[in-house]
Image (cartoon, rainbow, N blue to C red; front, side, top):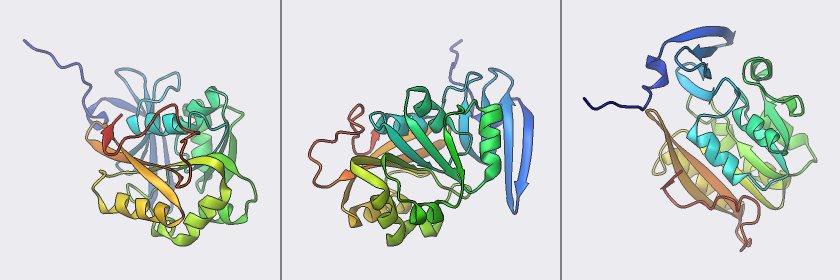
Length: 239
């Protein structure tokens, strides 16, 4: 009889609970899947991180963000979770600054997801950090959620202006949205990026039953994509 080699959705696979953390009304779990030893970072029912036992990323949206930021020597990551993107970039020599408002995320990323020691971890609110910092990066990854929703404060002109101030000339922004390219949320993110002079390109990804869209942005006057040229984005394309 025919067989299917595609693993079932992660939630239907046998797993071991490694850690449980509550912060306010937020609930986080770290689990290890018994069939392959991979590990996952979950908030509520939302899967944020999934890596092999060696810490290698297994999610398509993270791979897409990594490709967009491949040529950026310095990357600011807003939102860390289990640190799969930070780990992947750091292992290839990128200087990574990871910001998260949940201090426990860094503990989890170091202990269970092999986040490298050289990744700079900053426990701070992303908006406050961007508003106060004078540093600039050649790449910025935006991966901020409550569950699967992006908080409204990240959809403001003020946040867009802060992103632009922190971006080096020729830099790239990769923004993860937990929805399809035709969604209202993706449209809001793309519009916010256009309002600050960036050109957004959309790449759709799929993991199990989840669909994400990575919005990759360069400056409008930037005819040569430069940073991130290792993987050219296509509108509504698959990774």
